[in-house]
Image (cartoon, rainbow, N blue to C red; front, side, top):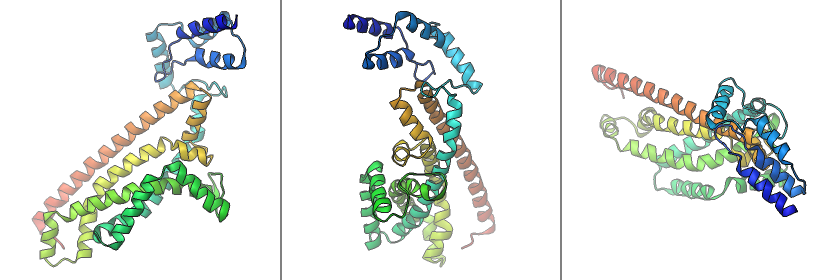
Length: 316
């Protein structure tokens, strides 16, 4: 009897179409999966009512058009877990993720920019070799292991910082530091390579022949020309962090978008998951558009300044 019921439930599930990316929620499996595990049985009438309630009996084009219309009106559906509007859930978590993103990027710039420039200046010397070893070591550590290690040392042993992350107070330090160290291990090598490549340009030899000092060439000419690829890297990282650093947010119980996505996946809360995917896609599109605009503006300004310098003579 139980096997036949399960077979009927399974066949009923196959009538459902899980449109994950379009917001057409897969209610059948979330309902039957839980009832089978708990030993409960769901009648075909109840399943049919649920299908009708969610509009899953309508044609695909009708379902997609309905979701698209609701999406452009700011309606992302309701959470299966809480019964609240998904848009409201995202609005609660986005400020925390935005705060963590800005803090992590600020720490990343403070750590990686001066170290990367110094590594390029003292190429293949003791300082450069030591930093390269440290960056390779940090790159090999998973973010969750680094988070647990810092939690053990800074919270449990030294008792300097709280274990649970919070938007106010010291709770933001450890999550931001974990993200910053992970990014800095990559940024330092990138900045080092960009500066070394710029130091090989012909204008550097021209400035040296005119008597410009090494530090002046590096800090007043080379770094200015290196900012364009560095800003591009920052834009990519900003989009990634703003999309939610799920692992770090979950470990530190940070109330952000990443933690919301993890808990929604565990609860099979499909409306929240699909809203998170749409949020990620929109963030990357907006960040890339803003980045392209800034790069285009930067190139135009640099070209105008180059023409001006050629007319009036180069200044050392």
